[in-house]
Length: 469
Ligand SMILES: *Cc1c(COP(=O)(O)O)cnc(C)c1O
Image (cartoon, rainbow, N blue to C red; front, top):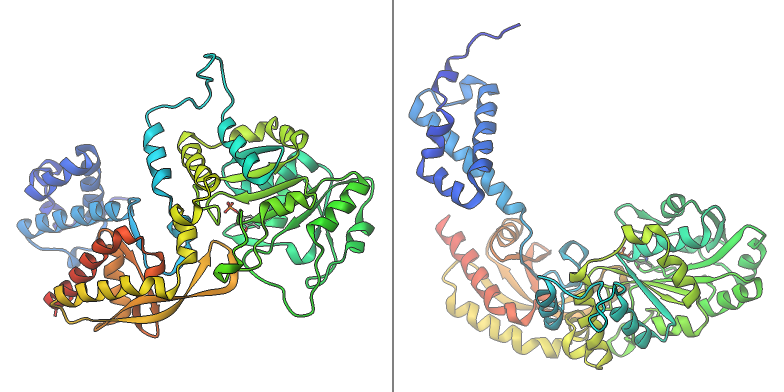
């Protein structure tokens, strides 16, 4: 069946005519002519399908409408681009913002190897070398492990470990540790994916060593402990230490695997952050394998790290899945630089995630005062700025019930949601936090090098507001 020809269809401009409009020609330079031609075709299709009474009734207005819609489409694709964000949320390891901000040296290391590197060649002999060998030896030095392996993230490390060590068999874990980390990462699903039978023992709040011991039988392949990174079970609770599990495993000739999550190398108690398991402690207590992320408290790029006994790590390495989960030269470069900073004992001087966690209100005050002075001097808009005490958080599933006293720039003078949206859409994007209808920029998570850019954005957002009112 053919539909009657609608009168407004005759008003639609030809594709070439639209491409010739100065605004669209400029878009062609930025996005490529083929891409913009597609935008134009899509917009024309959309208008053809639209209702005539909602569209212009003359050709010049129709052409203007087409150009407007094409620009809007190009703008959408521009806004989706991955780009720089100033983190004013106060969440140090913000998963949606890419977790750990990298150290300067790690950034330089990425640039250095970007065009090519000795990823799998031994420059001494010219023979094929092993990917990751340098980073693995750093990891051995830093954790005391016999061997190490790097994969795409800690979820991948868990999947690879379970599949290699226990496919078709049982792994025993406490009911209190069947975690969901976020998104689709739920431990029971990972077990299923790895073809491993999950044997839950104990109860949500209490699991004793005897519960694990009673669950061991001929089909048991390993004992697993998972650090409850993003929640805490407190009150009437009891859990089994990795040392006790490792001793039980030794008796029964089973590996004890410890998923510690955050990759903490030091005791952070003196920064007000307790309770994070330390990788070397876990190995010393007898864990056969320890799993953690590279982009949480280690402060490096996204990756999953497995350290432990040589024989087990070699088995993981030769699983074909390892090839599917491997990381590239850029990740190795950033990880190597980050681990070298740890080895040099300069983590709290150079690794932004750790520096930010260690900041006190007193550290932040001079910056807050200087920023406020600049804002008050430059801003002619309707906003008022002040300094406010806030609580920041470690984030990234680390230290869920511990907050860090911090300082924020408070901006008032318009609807908080609208101001936050304008800050987010600008360039560089600024992510803020809204508390009690006030927009707050927590300075803990703003890189000091970004302070000037932050002032620029806040002044601009304030002026944009003035012009629009
Ligand atoms: C964060 C976390 C994971 C997942 O790590 P990714 O690197 O994000 O894949 C797994 N286990 C624990 C205990 C964690 O804290």
